[in-house]
Amino acid sequence: MKTGPRYKIAKRLGASVFEKAQTQKFAISAERSAKNKKRSRGRTSEYGKQMLEKQKVRITYGLPERQFSNYVHKALAAHNMKPTERLHEMLELRLDNVVWRLGLTSTRRAARQMVAHGHVMVGEKKVRVPSHMLAAGDTLAIREGSKAHGMLVGFAEKFAERPLPSWLSWDPKTMKGSVTASPTASSADVAGDLVAVLSFYTR
Image (cartoon, rainbow, N blue to C red; front, side):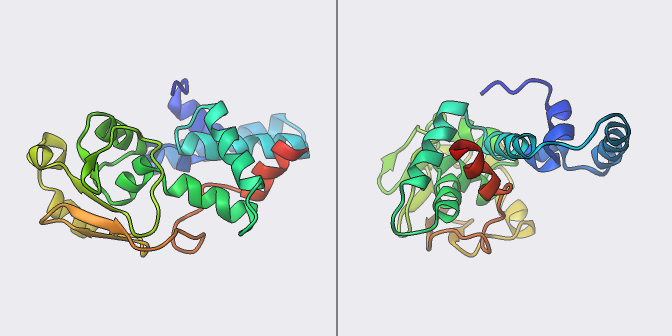
């Protein structure tokens, strides 16, 4: 997905949209830009706030507009849970996002590439679709021939430094794990105001 100048977008939507923008240097620059904008602009409309939240969540997960809106409409049609909870669950259970949550890559973009290049197995099958939807009970692993891949060198040491979400399990030695439960707002950080996102699509 093409996003344009990443730092410029991150300053507008927040550092969380891109992992590499989450540095002290960027935070200082963003704070300075925010003060300048506050002086030059009036209040943002409710529609404008909803638009910003929608863009923030969409870009955080690296999704094109059509795919993101499909998730929103599916969430709105859910009958067994709140739309905000269902939307969050679907975004988090994407295979590329789970690969990133496991710490196998430093960014979601790299996680999409890892999946697309055939390094990840779901159950007994190699899956190349980053949007593949996982569910509680699914198992996943790094393909045997990919364990020596450059991006995974020293993974065990890196894994020890990064907290594992409570809804995932992973063995850094065997490079195998599973989805142990459905992600919730308390077990997986919400990327933005999902109420505002849903309001944007239902206005």
